[in-house]
Image (cartoon, rainbow, N blue to C red; front, side, top):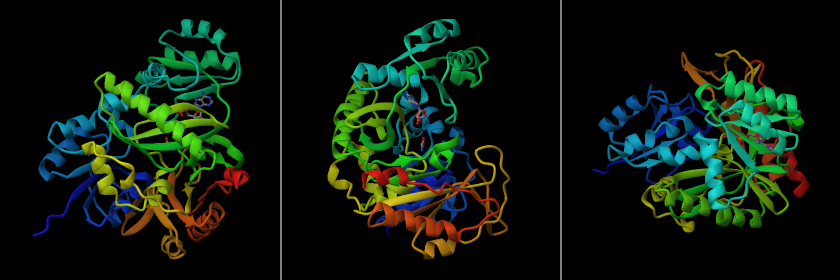
Length: 427
Ligand code: AMP
Ligand code: GLY
């Protein structure tokens, strides 16, 4: 009897649906589980009613069911040591151990590692005392960037345009504990200008393979206006990340960081998300994340032509090499459809229609915040769906993705109309 490979994916967003969707196409046809998953993952995997942060329950399930591979989507369980806990049971995990995940979990640690590895990043100081931090502002011009050290669900970065704003951010974080324990330390750094790109580096501790660069759209409204969100759309490849920029990212950023971690006895296995600020040939690291980005994953993973299990396995086993990762030649775009009110408060339970029609039009619809209610798919989050399309070039991918979006309806749905527009100036 042929035993199917079992793969467990942790998380419940568009990123995890895209991971599951890609795994489902592998030639080894793995048996898929998702904890906790959403209405999209439910069509391809068995959803488990276990929260992504519930490490004891995940370990208990894994001890009994022995997945051959576990893929961890979000940062919280990685930073809390899910990989370490599963590896202690002899299980294989794609995603860094707790000490390596601290590249995202502690911005102070991340900056210190970059400094030691000689990686270009904004000039910075770290502080635990607000009076010292305020005195230190003298060394930076305006705007100045203030970051809570720990995980703050994407809200821990303040770009202060005035001295007064900077002082009140420092008081809020260090004295009023606005981000709780995540704000016992702050990073103060200089403001960088340029264009941002996200580069995912697959790592096996030693070897690195970069996936094509993507660009996210963080603000809620067109022309990068309004408040920040988790990301409203993405496209790949991002022309701002030229061949030269990618080479620099591998040789002068990722490899030195892996070496520096290794020197400290830390092995980085999984994906290292490099948030870059690019200006011409100048590349600076804004941040590292210890996981795939969302919604970038919804364009980058579908762009991989090769099977995913062998790639993730090579990262775990230390056998990663370029030939494992063959890419499609088309461009991809994804548009996030959000609930009314997002990124503020929003209703849930709105009925969604038109997904089948969007897929018939050639799009891949990934569920981000959805649930099943009486057999129907309803909204269950702020970012509800992400609609991905390929095209022979970026313009065609964008047109097709919006054709898909136009098929889908739920009350008050909103989305940006200018995804990938920034790239057109390069084309
Ligand atoms: P981070 O979580 O560190 O990536 O910061 C979130 C966002 O804040 C980034 O995507 C940038 O848009 C912005 N940002 C962070 N650091 C800087 C910086 N030093 N200069 C300019 N913008 C920054
Ligand atoms: N799209 C940015 C992130 O996942 O952090």
